Image 1 (spheres, rainbow, N blue to C red):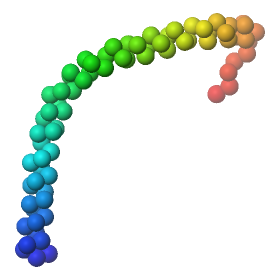
Image 2 (image 1 turned 90 degrees about the vertical axis):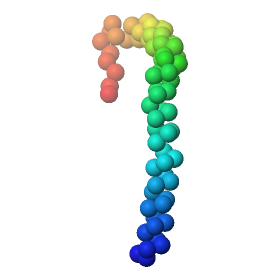
Image 3 (image 1 turned 180 degrees about the horizontal axis):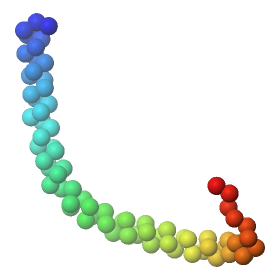
Image 4 (image 1 turned 135 degrees about the vertical axis):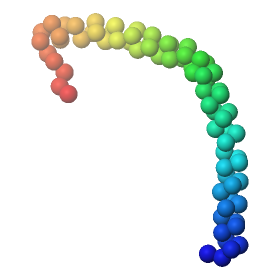
Length: 72
């Protein structure tokens, strides 16, 4: 590789490093805020899953009482 090619390669690597570390630092600092924002949505999902599990359990109760087991 010629001297100019090596220089351009190092220049590209340096520019990529300089452009990436601020984004990485910003992501590291904002991650707790993102987790706090998404917490209500996760709680909603857990509540919805529980609310849908109750009718499903009631629907399958007669089959379970007769000893039918789902095949996996």
